[in-house]
Length: 85
Image 1 (cartoon, rainbow, N blue to C red):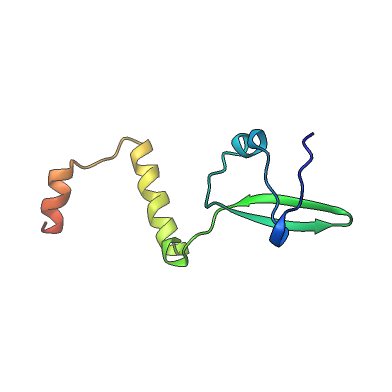
Image 2 (cartoon, rainbow, N blue to C red; image 1 turned 135 degrees about the vertical axis):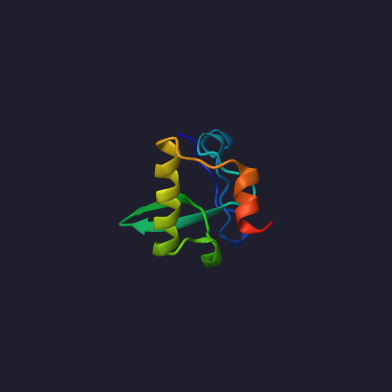
């Protein structure tokens, strides 16, 4: 297990192997949690609230996926025409 040093401004370097195994990239966010005498660093994805489906939108999307699984689909040209595009 690698040992790292706490640097200026409390910065800690995540060892490359751990960084790569977690699929982290520069600029990603992590959550830092204290549990008793342990520090846990967990990768986090931040989501813009505008990009989250409402429960009603989720039902519509789920219904669409169910229709696709059953083989129910409409050609794109027909769908565009029906929408007036």
